[in-house]
Amino acid sequence: MDPHSLVSSSFWESDVSWLMQPGELTRIPNLPIPSLVFATSGSTGGARFLALSRQSLLTSARAVNEHCRVDASSVWGLCLPWWHVGGFGVIARTHVSGCQLTIDPERWNANSCFTWLSESRVTHLSLVPTQLHDLVEAGFHGPASLKVIIVGGGRLEAPLARKAREQGWPALASYGMTEAGSQIATQDPDSLNHPYDSEFLPILPHWQLRVDDAGQISIRGPALFHGELQVQNDSWSYHKRQGDWYETNDCGELLDNRILVTHRADTLVKVLGELVNPAAMESQLIELGLPSGKIAVLALSHPRQQHRLVMVHENLPETWVATVLEKYHQRCRGYERLTEVVCLPDFPRSDMGKILRKLLISRLPEPFQFRE
Image (cartoon, rainbow, N blue to C red):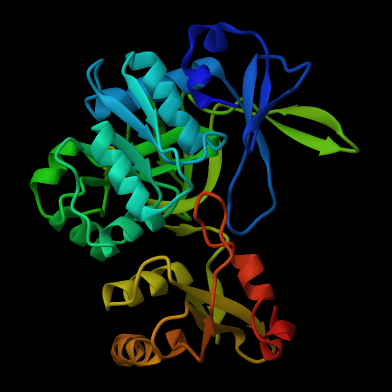
């Protein structure tokens, strides 16, 4: 279907609930609130189906537009799947602002995307880190019309962000999730005038956040999903969200209405009795020179060490990997050493560009299989 039709008032004023599926809408009957139902695109767990009211999505859209200084003269560019909340957020922002929506006519390709951005004079754009990486590594410089790129769907690593800004790509780190209808926190556009720093992100005004003693983040606000659907034998059942606060699976720190997201609660593992954060290890390796989105640090079950840390890379030159690993091992703690390095030709990814880590583990060579 043509996603331009989703900008129309008739779509937003309808009382029909829709399941957002690749390239199409499927009607969902008997929801208590007319809603749009999105499948989550997490990298570690199975799919969940979350119901968000149109009003929740419009609340998010207005807040993002205001934060990113969108007005009727702006041009939102869409090159994410519109059936995911990240892409659909662009459609909602276009509807509430009355500005122009332009859609990349090709499947993702850095060359054709750059041409489209330049010719369409896009001012505002949402990308996942992999897409930004592709544009930067292709050597393109950001078109003069482009004012803001919201980078979500994964961590924007500092080396990529710095290189992007040097090449004129106005990249802003963000923190969001399907449950929130899009963004929860996003760098201020004024930060584009200063050296890149993604430590703490400003929380958008329609959200309240709190962090418990273990660092786990909970959110509350009018853009929160209202329920979850489960499907069995082609029959859907609805389960209402309980309570005003929603406990996420993310951990971090709060400071002056800003949030620093450090890791997911389910990703910390024990190695030789010590707690280890594989995501932080990935960030260190990227800071030392390996490319974002081309590596993964996996913790595989091990009978003696509890977990064994393995780095997988996507067809990178062995000498490059070895040089960075030598630097990493000179500074890491003993239990954070990477005991194995595996090269795979292609990483499995979602259509939002996330590395599908469980599937990646299943593709490791045979000696690794018994450990997970």
